[in-house]
Length: 572
Image 1 (tube, rainbow, N blue to C red):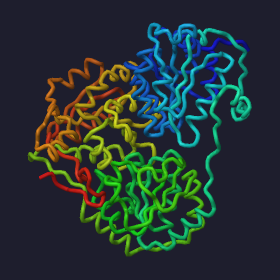
Image 2 (cartoon, rainbow, N blue to C red):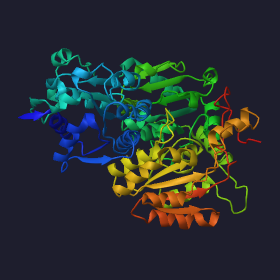
Image 3 (cartoon, helix red, strand yellow):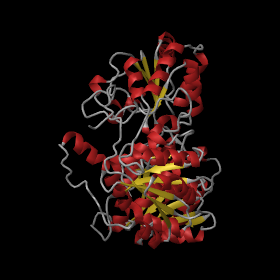
Image 4 (cartoon, rainbow, N blue to C red):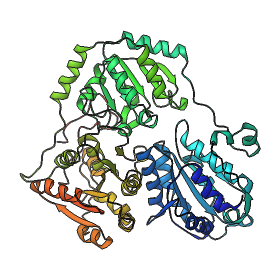
């Protein structure tokens, strides 16, 4: 059938079973938005307050659902406003397809109005990107973009489409079996990257891993976001039980292992638990699954796990020996590798080791104390929230102290419950991500944990939540400062608080109501539970303004240059 380029985009989205897109219209995408009007009964569009919000919403949709998120923006500033969101998805390996418009083909390279080389701009922060200069290539390029985004180590892909391509017409054939649309010859003709099959683990490496596992008396499993991406949480649990080992999860893997399980230690690294640090210090084998060994985890790379062998399981060979050297590299899909190892490994028994680990957990619990008798601590707020939601809510966060407190004090029981910007550390991520997550999972409670610094970066997306009646809760932990940076200033800059004391005059309840949301405030310990209950009972967007002490810190903490095995537990 003969379709315009804009209609071909819609048909390709339907082929990929896309039901929702997030975006913002503009001149270069007028034809695309006209097609969205035509297809509105099949593709729901959410117009965000800012293109960055659209990128974060597509990201949150992808993290919550496991599908590929889609965002759309016009050329020039519309496209560049997506950049932070694309980089966020790239750092955390989230599948997103960003579709941008551009000026007509004959205007490219002439510094035309609202023209920017967005493929050049985003080259370092996408798995791949494309500019479509022939309408005959449009459908295959879009199909290829989704394939790249969702296969192997997932990530964002950008497709830039000049406006006249969206207006031209071309024959389009619907396909039911997308696998049949890819052939190597056609990919070469279109200069598309050849998508390689997943690496398969070498039998010799598996045998070496089994030998190390069987020989170990004090094994330690560390799981990263790749476990969730691979859908390998059930396999991780079975492996931990077979190996009889404790488990720690990275920030990106919160919920990848049931945190109510006796084996779970909490996070490892800069703001990990003392129990996880003690376990690292005394283990005789470190098994890393689906993690890139972020500097926030290993802290001083020269001191990390030097006393024991390290097995690293990862789908991306580029991660091997990148941040630290490991003893055994096992390349492939984490789900399959864990299944094979569990199947071949005899039941291990490390009761003495597990008892020591349990002792550390009991001896070094996470605790916060209020400076005033009726003062509010983040721990009380988040543990109350977890209890009231039955540990079932989807939690998004912005970046800062509140992000770490959410990871420490909300007990995550399953994958895709905790959505945060782990790699890029993007303030302003949370509310857009919460909107995307709520759209993906309309039956779940979605709560964004934010701080007053991050809140001011994305509060305009409250207008989006109100317009589309998306009932997210924005839980604002307000300490009137940029808490995480201020915490570093305490430790390393002799308490010189340069530009981290905000003390803005914002009336958060009034602001929320101006956007059309409901609002509540928590100022005392006794208000925590009743206010949270009231907020959770609403069926519309809510802002909960929670006043906390500016000197509450994120502890434990590993100072810069120190070993991950030696966190501090006080700032005094």
